[in-house]
Length: 353
Picture 1 (cartoon, rainbow, N blue to C red):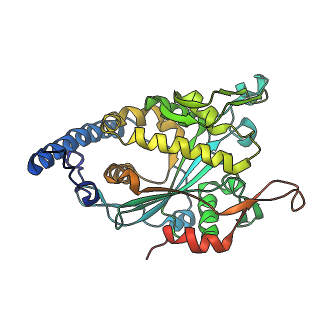
Picture 2: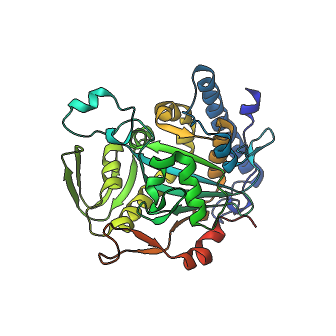
Picture 3: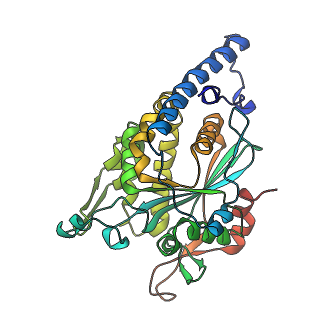
């Protein structure tokens, strides 16, 4: 427990500039800043320690030795402070899973007359983000990968990249993303299903976003009803999911990614403020059954701490270069990646150097 109570990072030099309007002595600022961190991290660590004692904190995928070997060493903390000791690439996937996607769906879902979202990780990855945490540059890079990206999936040929999870789980998804970006290393994964995303946003107290335009859509087969008005507003989990899941604007993956990035930016602002961090144990307890990862709690806490120390201006959002296919090229609609642009402008953000 004492180890957890000391989880405080060094000050990020890029966040230490002093405004002329701030006359508080530097030593006082440093003292109180560190005291706040002690209080917050102690509360978080204590709660997480209790969570560890009482239950398994997250679902853990059963990886074969070969699959685990692909991700390599997932221990990324250094010393008693669990400071991030090297750059890491983490694949984050938002899962949209219907009863038809999984063999383990409850019998109750068959009598509903529609297809509900189920608490599983077997289906298509509706959202794919590759996140680079880099302690050398003190930056975080977030790459949005369109779910309809046409790419090679080992053993299955050219497919939409979101099908890799259904075909071979998180391992095959990570391997496909790695290949797409020039065989870069991917060190871990986190999968969260739609049910968990809604719970997460509610546990954070909602998110404030500027909805770009009126959004209205109805799909009775999934009980999916979207009705949002344009403008800045505070969204609860259900409303935020409506924004994330809307796809009927004629812009395909690009429109969806823009909306995903709106929600992602709002989540970052909400998740990394001190008040939210102090409630992390409660938040994790709320969503833990909806998360699957190969990272242990120490590694996850290390990434959270690094995120807290990173300037918002040093968090960069990127989108995989490419274009939408036209009707003459394929029967299905694809996002066709531009390999030259990927090699020149995207892969360097995620490579070790």
